[in-house]
Length: 429
Image (tube, rainbow, N blue to C red; front, side, top):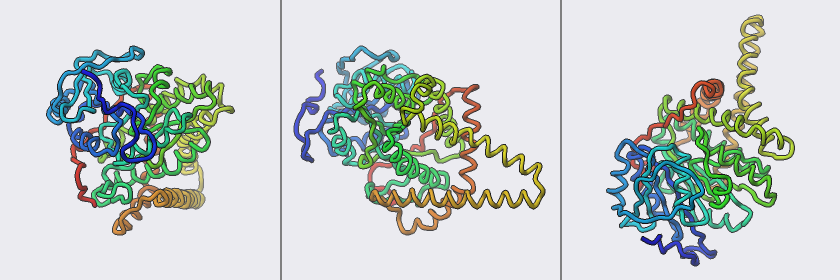
């Protein structure tokens, strides 16, 4: 069967520039609880030149059954490029209801392996990678298309908000009404990560992580760097691979598309949050070791190497051990009055800088057109206090324990989905 004829080049039905062909890859391992939301999101996108490829990576639940039920799959033929390796393909299917949606059924090999399979069978020049729990806003692909008009952009990240805060106005309003305290504090984390950290790092050409929840890539570059490596942190790894590629092609760059907005589900329990954050920290250590030669050669010539070593590793990781050590030594050896003075001074500066950071992130969020509901004011205030005096220290535990446990346990530890349906009008509207 021929590939989707909608992917033929043509002018956009919605805009002024030509729509580029885009392949959206969605790896799926035991995603039956969220797959309905994902498919509904794909159906609502305001774009014509795209295909969606779901990669069922050996799921042991009913993911494949759900895909067949929702899409009415029929066998089809798809030709791989033959450049990347992946586990055995057991079936290739096309939806009878939505001809631009395909499913690859394969043996389990992990997220990186599934993405490699998707890249191989994609038929366009550009790739978007999404987690199964990530939904795109209606105009996200148009924003990506606009950013790709710059021929030097070979990879990019989209803006990601928290799915539990999504309302019926996904490009204007966020709500904390149905988010528990763990989700709320992660909302602040995301605002700081995307609106402050990523925007700043892009200006310095130092973006070290393209969000795995919403990544944009030139397919040829993915093939040139041999695709994804099987590792605990494939999103960091592929970003650094592309930086290493860019080092040999000076005109190329990685961008951040603030107008391309998606929403992803975050952990709602401490157990799942711990799994996720420990995996993230293990990924940083893994890439530090794997790319040590690249970092060593380009430490003072490439901004990404400098920031990765000094910000992520020295400030973000080693400083946690140093500060904890100083705190313990002062507690043991300082006189009681001196110790109390030290503690209060320490907490004061934590509050001062933590408050400034949180408020700056909320301000940037508003600058880009997003606002919380007025009735979220008290919830937001309590979340900021919780973030400064509690979650900051929990995060230090994730960093310290994750860094050590990497050398003893490299398991991926998949976070459980809530199984909640998010499509349609959100009750938090």
